[in-house]
Image 1 (cartoon, one colour):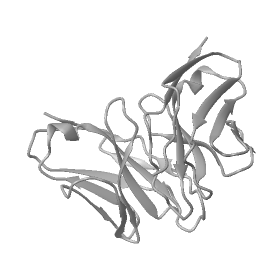
Image 2 (tube, one colour):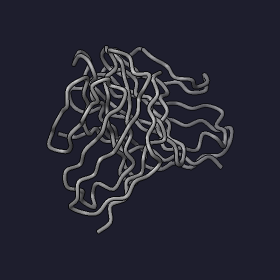
Image 3 (cartoon, helix red, strand yellow):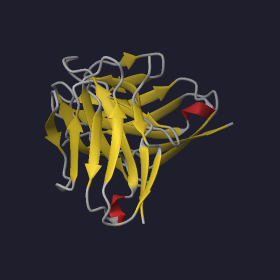
Image 4 (cartoon, each protein chain N blue to C red):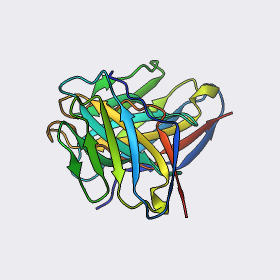
Length: 111
Length: 115
């Protein structure tokens, strides 16, 4: 299983943008990049995913490096509700691929 | 539309006992995966069920078994409980045939404590 590397933790201030990095130097050409987050006392929650092009949705943006060996999850205006553990995950093609989670990165949002 | 539901919320067992955890997938989903999350760690994949069959399995011993019913709900059974089985057990569902990069929807989990 392809692995990802994330910082253990990051801090941000409320209403400021946050850039969460992820390295995945061994990514294969068919691996998708997924981001999930887990709020305290909850199950993981899907945030965004992409393959090659940058992606935007109502929650966040995903910027993918041209060589695909790294990506950045962008929260445009952090809120207190965004405080969570963020997981960057790679998965291959095919339906219902299992998700291989690392330890993730804890984001603290200061008021 | 109800999301993924799991029961019970919390459970306390003693070593050597057996436990059954239950999961109802999100409406329209027919694939169920189970994950174990130890304190401070990311979730670890246990197995996945589709069409009432175990389709994929992670690195877990045979003490962990499961079942999927015709209505797509699922059970996770753990026999001969060990202290190390104490964890949050998460169920995730996804629709088969969605194509690449299926999004998985997680339930709130069952917190199992083994004494």
